Image 1 (cartoon, one colour):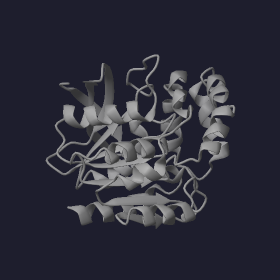
Image 2: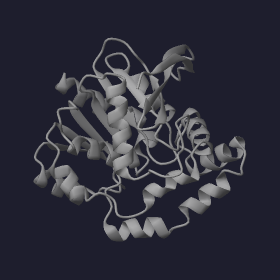
Image 3: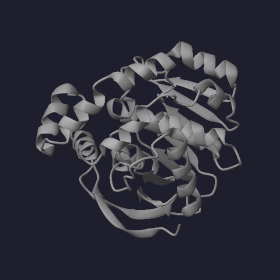
Length: 281
């Protein structure tokens, strides 16, 4: 599982300067996991994206964290520069990939942060225990009822993606800017590129049943932060219920944000996450 490391140069949105991050491949579970990494002898933080995303979509948050933390941003299987096997897209598969990445990169008790699909994956990893993690941040994870899981599976989301794969990046960018006028041009570009590099097989993660999220949260034994917007998948009522199951779960609600909280309120998310991480240090 020895990683192969090169260099990737990403432009900084703040001042137009260039930031050099590591660009690598970790071999685990018979596949290749591509990742970006800010590097340095700092406490590690691993960021897990959602369906149709990529590690690069965490760029704004990574910039907010890289001064104090070694930020690792993997592409999930079927996404970005990672392998796209024909099968193996359940949450246990994604969680095993994350465990393999942590061990392959010799990360010492990282904090794991995940959004949406990445949030459920992060929760599953944390529920396995074994002293692997130092802390957990869940950003509106896909904690869905069985009925909602079936609704998502039976929706046309995969068909929409199939059609999107036939478009040019410029067309996807134009559509996204119309739908999400408040998102930064940089994030819209990164999301369009990530979508075009998402294989249809990745949508198998939508096949029920998901892990039972109440059981997963109940098994977590590390400091945890659940961040939701005011129009989330995980409602405040659900979050409060989860905290009653596991008192180690802290709740933070960000205003003016839906399920796409990391893209709609990246600065506020950065503030919330940095505050939590500093408490763990």
